[in-house]
Image (tube, rainbow, N blue to C red):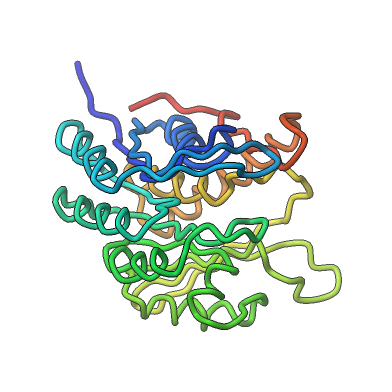
Length: 276
């Protein structure tokens, strides 16, 4: 007896160090029992210490990769990561429409956890114009939200208004990630992620901040985990909750890894599910 497992697609850059990008996404898909596919947007030379080289893939080849897998295998959910150029954004948007990909999670990779700029203005503007309206969810971190809104977002009290303003850009829902939150009071040790739906419904997910340098690929992993749970049929708020739990456990498991001299990866394989 044959069955079709949940089919998930990552449209993102390749991380030669294996901690982020399509490598992290495919590990996440596998760990959550999904069949993962990829459309590579860029090749990077990087490790735990940083990025030393980036080579963008031609936009038509990015579109061809999506066409190849979506036209044959099918896509139940997809996520985007680093896109690199406005032309690639346009190619992705066209492919999303051609194949009717409705569960699209957009991780607007513009500013890294370390503060490095990863997207130019033209690419960022194209992402807002073409992908936000096609996204079931957009997952910016606070520096990315600050860039998009033209004002600094750093405190919990600012998050709800910021999420509403991001929602007005056309997406169906926003998950504003609180990893860069400044402490809101003496002894604060946790952080909040805020989900706002199109109808204004707000859900806040609170979890402890883990003291570890092994956080490389956290944003990629979260967006991939949400896409995986959407492909498995979970409603969006539940998919976000499950994905956040998965990331927290992967961070905790990764804290024990000794890989490289810099910011190490999560441990995506701490408790893999069976495919299907």
